Length: 332
Image (cartoon, rainbow, N blue to C red; front, side, top):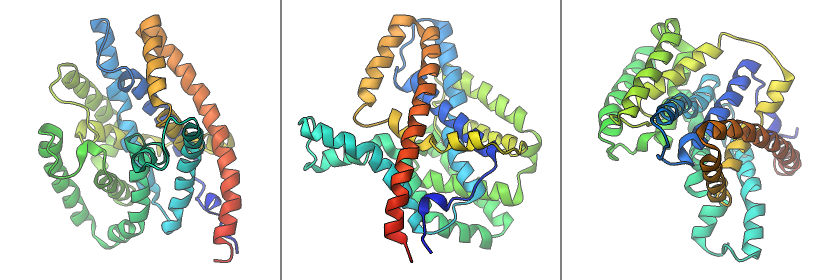
């Protein structure tokens, strides 16, 4: 029987597919709000709003990984191939054109790392590939370690991370503010625990916890008392809360599921190593020309446009991958 990797993924309820769409929207909005613009602002009111938007959007990355842990990554190492193919479909054609135009040199290892593999821009994709490879082992750990030991592990590790990584920003743990495979593994195990055993106090007070964390982190960031890091509990708890909120609303929608398939491509397109500098220049010009509020309205429209482009690209690469996967995995 042919093994077609693109079709082996279990169909999820549309509530979490809708959440994935919302989360990638938050990621792009957060990048447009701060990452592309930098820390400059024109008025104090704008500064306050931008800080608030950043705090609201930042939990999206943690939530993406938590969704994977909530459902569990099934299968074996072959699950990484469709992800790698998506990455290469985004980078290789553009890199070849730039190489022909002599803007980059694909015989240079640094250029390959930057423009084919995505460099630091695709850190999320690379770390997620690592998580997929670790998932079979992590699943065994979760199902063979009891609830008390797991809970002690989560509390103990976070007790190390908060002072060393969040407060002092030390690199000794290798967590790097959440930009690491280590943190993805922590999130995956945490989400498996949430699904298997639940966290009663958080499930009961999820809305209050999410709002309280966002308000407190906004105040702390506004006065520059503590920065935004994915490992910050005030960023982690809202991500956990939004998972618990969306699990309560079960529905099925072919339209939502169709659109949700393009989320990873959206991320890769807007952080494309060949284009992100130009995107940054364009957005900064838009910001200084129109002011922050009109700029954000324009950004929302651009995100919607980019999303539909990404869905089209995703469907095209999925068709190509089906043909390739049949040749590779048929009768295996």
